[in-house]
Image (cartoon, rainbow, N blue to C red; front, side):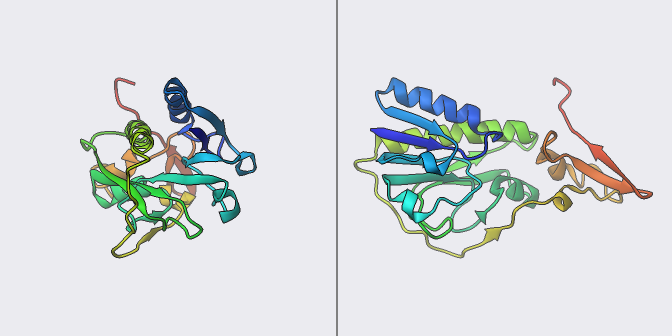
Length: 213
């Protein structure tokens, strides 16, 4: 198969997993390109749209027979941005990962696979992303191995939508305990979007690491 993998952010956490996926697919005899710009998409059999920030319009989707996205929610619940972080913050430690067909409408295409991703409750953001990246690779490989027989299923149920996280979402409440806000600490992106609090007209950043790190 002629396969394109696209991640449109060169700083994306997914890049190492995209490279690993490319390596595995090449070892299985596929022709694979890993790109970061939708204008580089060529005609082929499959485009894997992995951790992209920008919507890929219909004209580009028509270049491949299938255009696959892996999204960390039980679609149509949890469409939108940063679904894993929002769900952890809501109190969940088991989330559903959906592999679906990209269509013109946002996160609306039929799905092929849904699988559970379980956390123990003590993972920090880096560890959760590692588990998610591995799950995304595994689901893509399953889809490709079964592409001739796997059937699409239309999304059904109540649609919900997560907004893009902003700097305000990283602010801690100094009147609450660490225990009360531990889930907020768990989803903190130490390097790109660290947690912070304000006290006496001053802003302070906080970063969290496990002791073994």
